[in-house]
Image 1 (cartoon, one colour):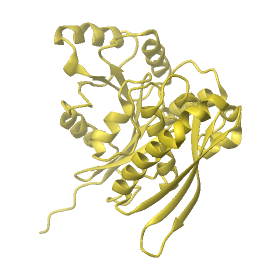
Image 2 (cartoon, one colour):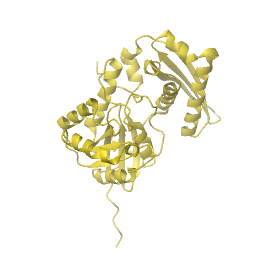
Image 3 (cartoon, helix red, strand yellow):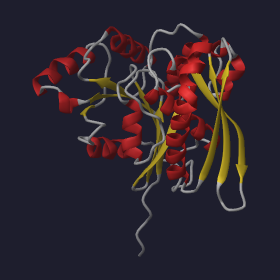
Length: 302
């Protein structure tokens, strides 16, 4: 008598939290791939990124969401809307909290909204490797007074501490059902959007203050070449003339460095040669344009 096949499981787990809690680092570490761009600056992620993770017979669909903060621009509102939509659509929500920052007003507000939402919610304290263990208990107790969490996990997304335990629990928590994506897929992120995001990551890493927040990147042309390589043309839109000058740099040095590093990262991810060409254009008010938000993969909440 043959053994029956294990029951397949599949579900969505959304990672939500305040800016800079480590959501993108957690997604990349769990999937083992660079799916979501990362920088030390807050509000780097602008739209939902799906990571597809296999654990035994379970397919875990991890959703990295933008950090939740008080929005000012139309872009900000679209980012926060994307985060809450990701949470609303998920089978399970992971509230990721920077243990160093503790129970801030922003974290408190997110926990209160999750309490109102209801549904399954887990608490994940991140960066526990850089905080004294006795400080974690009162933080957990304070958060548990605001919302109900099925489970609490202590992890370090940066070095991987506690992630095996979290991953095993996620696999068990996924509802029974067929897999929604091929088992060898890593994400549903289109290559064109991935290219734009890798350029934007370099802008965050190589510029400062308002410049990275005032810039967006769109892939204008994607041309497959006969030799197996790809030619990519992308435009960086900036809100101010001063930002354009900073991005281009003296003699075009900075934009060349941004392009070179983004090209290397994209070549590594696509496992093929990439020819990347960047253009910088000033476009005042791009962060209030519905068309620009849709190009980023965001729904425009108006």
